[in-house]
Every structure is written in structure tokens, then in C-alpha cells.
Length: 229
Image 1 (cartoon, rainbow, N blue to C red):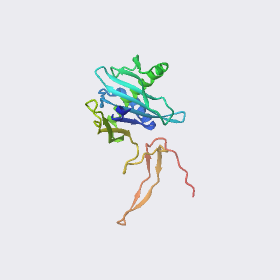
Image 2: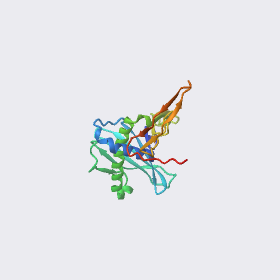
Image 3: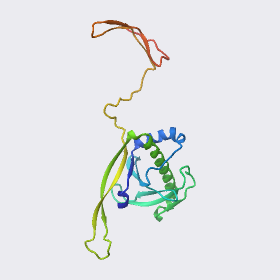
Image 4: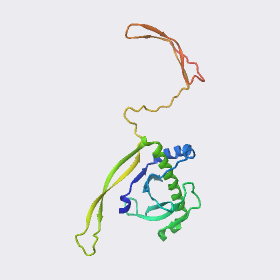
């Protein structure tokens, strides 16, 4: 997993996953210029499976053959063990989402070929939608630059103290929907239209003006209101 730790990451929470899917369903087909802004990285999807929090890791890399996605699975008990390379697919065209050839990296996953193929296809679609969403909703994208220590092996064999440590930087992309300071709070209007009674308005200057009754809102389906004294 050392190599994966060096890569840029796109972290997708459950809330972000739902928002991306909803937005992409409405806008995906109307966008002609679909681009892949990252040549390589790691898609991290947080999900809830039967009440258990799981983390799905998918490595993606752009090559001459297309975009290759590799699924990593944790074969140990939750909270321990390393993620193992399970299967890969290569997508040669953004429009290609069916009949994808899958490569199984270990015989233990052969029995799960069909499930892995479905999972990788789903991850490919999520990655493409996430790229589009990130380009059109930069206000929700939070990026953070982090550094990771990497141990380099000696160039010459037999050199005892040739190991060195270097620090590489990577970018973590997350989706943040926390309201910004000064941002207006969204609300749902419960009444389509309503009447505002006439009233006197008194200004600081002492001037008094009569404000005529008015209908506010969409001005449709105005319901009468009963006032009790």
C-alpha cells in the first residue's frame, strides 16, 4: 500500500455520493467536453454496508490503452490487515460501460469475478461523474496538500546504510457541504402564496405612510385566512 499512499486521493462520503449521482443524472448528457483532470489517483468511497462502515479503494491510472481501474479489497477482519489488489478493468472510451474485460489478480477472487466487474464498472461511472461535479461545483471541493515519508532503497547492492527517507506531497480532495460564513440558509416555503395585510409604517423622520395590502409568493392558490379577536 506504500505506492497508493503517495497518490492524490478523491474521498467520497455517502452524502457526496448521493449529491453527485443526483446532479449527474440531470446534467451528464448535456456536457459535451468530458475531461479526466487527474492522470492517476485513488478513489476512496465511504459506504455503510449492513450498519458497518466500509472503505472501498479504487486505483485509477490513465494509459495509452485507456483508463485502468483496480479494486483493492481488505481480506482481514475489520480494523486490521492490508488491502490486496483484487481485479482490474481498462476502459478505452468514456462512453464504454458494458462488455468490459476484467483481470483477476489472485485466484482467491476468481469466484467473485462477476461482482468485481459490476463494482469496478460502478466505480468508473462514479469517478467520471465526480470529475464533472468537481469541475462545475468547485465551491464544494476542499483540497488539502499533505506530505508522506517514503523510504528509498540504496542504489548500490550491499550498501548497509544506503536507505534514505524522502517526503512526497499529495493532494486530498473531499466534498464539504458545511454552510460558509455569511451564506444564506436554505429553507422550504410551506405556503405557496399569502396575503399581507395593509398597515401603517412609521419612519424615523416621523412620517407615517399607509402600506396597501399585497399578495406575496407565487400569487397562485391564495387561501383565505381567518383572524380571531
